[in-house]
Length: 233
Image (tube, rainbow, N blue to C red; front, side):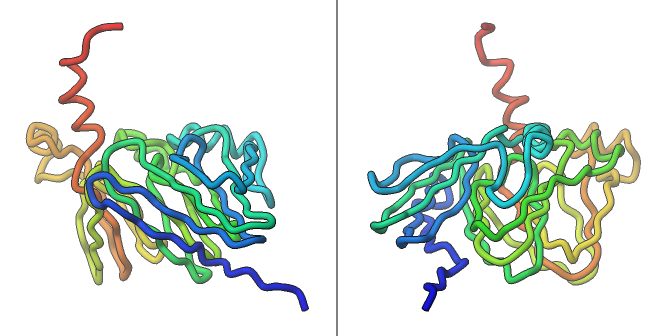
């Protein structure tokens, strides 16, 4: 009888929310895909291969789109062949990580937040629309759907917001949201002048029923604050 491997990754998030790491335990025959550069450490029996796409689909075109979304050109694939092993994954910025289970539905992840996923999770790269370019948060959403585990990260802590109706979230604080939600970009204040002078700019107005995951810190705001203090190179 053929062995059935679980599509759910055995994942433990530790040291959250300020300095999170994801500990993934693999049994023989299990594997997953991760963003290049996310690995902290791994067991010596774990096999790692690198490609521009997930093993079952994709190619150079998807890899180029992934770069535009803030992700890397390459993906790493980790597998345990004969012996079990452990892979540790980390974040680029100090913050939290979340392992979310999908059961055929999908979530939309902000560019740069994707860390890893089960082999049966499809990763599509969707254009946000011309108007969304001005949000300053990237040109692509990552549409993750299928069955298995998705791991994403944030800058600071991750907070879930359950929406039933309408809710407004600053674009720079969005990490991910369920695809059941509709959204539009709009100004934060009563006028465009007050929105930008108030430091908020554009916000995302969600409608419907679903969950949004937000991060406590805004990477763009942090970069603007830190940039002038850095020495020129």
